[in-house]
Length: 286
Ligand SMILES: [Zn+2]
Image (cartoon, rainbow, N blue to C red; front, side, top):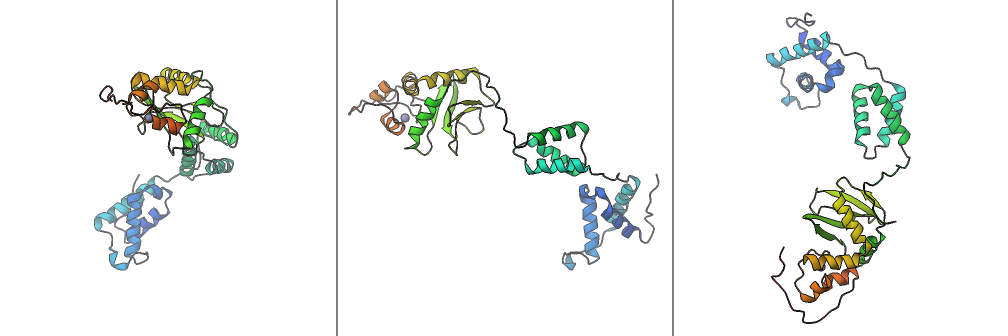
């Protein structure tokens, strides 16, 4: 197809700019936009200070005409907006509660004015789900009632701002700590961005699987919940590390109990305060 704007024509540039300005593709044509803007400024119409304006160079002029001809040779089909779909999209837009899939549908609709039949089906499905409580997904493993763990944290929260319990089990470290809103006790790897195993509801002690839940962690938590006090003692005696402060137990009486007197006080746990406890430094090291 031949070019529509003849670059030798004396109004070629003005025609090209007009073509680019009115072309619906312009949104996505950063380079064409910059040419249009410079042209407008050079004519003294823009908001830019006049002294920054410079006319298009011969090269830029040639580009403007080339791009305009490209637009004229490949006219964009008129976008017909589906009104029913638009309404549904707006509902999704207003209710985008962390649903990245819904977000992407909205984005695609905004740029294309329509969606594929499959995507439309999804929009209807997602709109119908708005406001409905989600059915809880079944946990991968059988988890017992974790109220005992919640109680442990409730006690600690009267003394500590950020109570945390850390275990190392078969070389895997994981920590239990309350969420900021204190509605959950999260179980995850201690490091930021590490494995996430799940959470315990503070309200009723039920468990919700996280993406990395596995049999070992599930077994450990189920065992721990049977008697958190006795199990934390067992853990301390076995590992030589206090699960509440993650420090080595370096005194005889602390080793005997399984945690130190400070943690006992903070977490409301039984402990005998024998004075002159003999230090056993060097026995355990992390
Ligand atoms: Zn401790």
